[in-house]
Length: 372
Image (cartoon, rainbow, N blue to C red; front, side):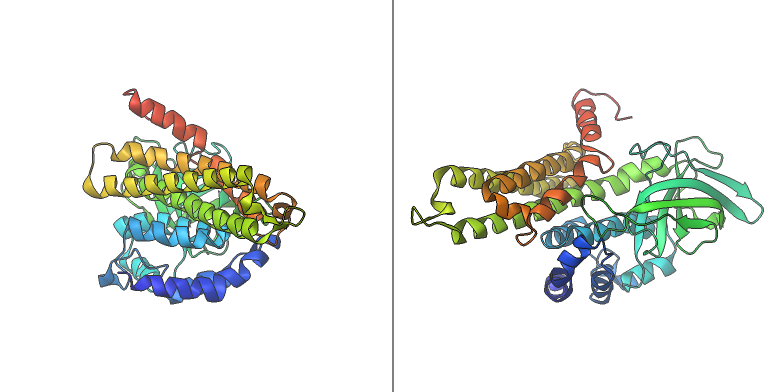
């Protein structure tokens, strides 16, 4: 299983790292990195070995996302969303798509957030109706990562006929009636290709359903949410690790000539750098504990899942704030990479489920209330 580490490291060193700044500055989708990750078996890492994949699980997926986030947040987010969608496809999708993912020839993503319900992914407004040739989808999806670059969407809609808030579908990206809207020019994660997708009388086969009609929310909460939240936390940990290291490099190499001392020799600077490291280590430990809780079926596993993205995301905001402070004007320039991480870190707060939504979920869970 650990064989993927060397292959991932090669892709990071040869492709991801050299292109990270360009991806950010120009809002460029990391096509070369995605292609290389597919060729090296990283995109198929979580598909069973019997279907040509790597046979990995959430722990391996989180590790990949963490390592990518240390170098390029946009590439890490593309892979994170791919792994999140792959969970449902692997559990409920057709074998040919599972094999294509395992072979690194298929990139997928989640299409949950909508214009009508915003970050409340659990309340889709898009329609799915039965027609003579299959199922007709009409929707206004917002902020779909990798939109127009992927091979399929894991798509949410209202049910056809069953009770329940949601049904799920595997929708090919080249389906007639789909339109990708514009380009992404955002504050952070500038290369992740997150743009709206609209479906206008887009007809899919009825067997494109992922799970039973109306059961989509249960599947999303039980199967996708743990992966998405843990990987999101791993993303934040990777980003923080990079910022702590970049800050340390700046502090040790920059001198106050009139004192004949480095910045690292200044007590207040060291204190803030220590705070950064402690926050990073705490978030990393929570990710590890969450993975252990899930693996052992511990009673508090779902509570840890609900906590981990919110905790790590807020830690990343704190850590990048401190880095901007103690590195001073140098951090505002792009050379260090800190200002890019500062921008990327803020995405966790608004990416569904948002930090506020997760805090509400945690509060509900510890008070014995239903999540929704």
